[in-house]
Image (cartoon, rainbow, N blue to C red):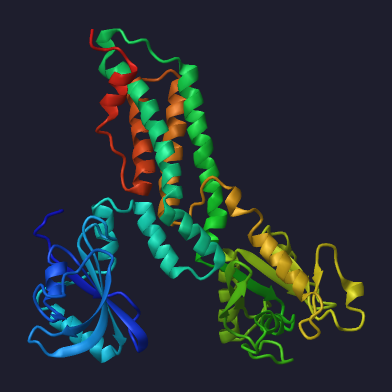
Length: 445
């Protein structure tokens, strides 16, 4: 609940540990007065915190003892991140110093819960829910793709797309509701063809957004699994892609018995590379567990790098999968190229031959289209679930219209679709639904 009497909160806003600068943030109705009480000199003389004006002041405890010479930055409500009065203390990044300041401020402020500053920004209308998720995504971004998609959300561009669709659904709902609620006023029913056309347009957008999840989920990192028989060269290729000897390599088959993950930056993508146990029938208990783990990773992989050394038969059942990228490894061996099969990339991890082509093919397989050309890219599983709900509801709505079923039932489906779409940005507002009805129809005879 919003209230002027709500707590003033305090938290460290930079990562814990030693650093050049640490930022402690206050937000709430007493943020300005509390901050001013911790500055020297006290009182109005030189300690008035103007909006957006940085000041260098001595930071003191409640008992007047000096803590640090810090930069103080204040933002007055409602023009702050949270919509409340906010003060930031930029002090030297000593962990002891930070804890001393926090302990002193906790006498008069409450420790913020995780995400509470951004939650207050949403409650005060400074951000919608999708923008708040964009803030988190921007903080956590590990790649150019993640950064760009997070900026889209934070800027409000994604939210505007959702709001446009929500408004179209509310307009459509107003047409249906008007027939139900004001039938005694002899309102002319909207032709079924027009209702179906509007629903089809909304469905097309929802289906396009759903398809974008294939790209959007890569903002959290792509999963690429190296798979092959023992001695196919998986570990050697992984080291070559990482340009570092991270994984143990040996000519003895079965050296890798458990899956090993390493991070790789590939252009604008962040990739987790998985080196896995060679796929084969084995009596060894530990190796069997490794093979089972390999098969689990194959199921969740965005791309399978299916390696085959010259003269190895390969793994035909995996080669048929859409996510598979076939690779002939050890292409530097005599006669290797003669064993190259259609669709395979010839690569030598030792000489570097084929590595640039493999990286390009891997990037192309993951990012087949430019995200900038897409109307909206879903990056959160929550959004995908809501889009799926809205899609199902709209399909039921259209099917009911075509079958000439009871209009109240179809209106319920349409309302549920609008609620699902609205939940992406924080909820649909039905308060002005009657305004839409009255503005469109002459019902006050």
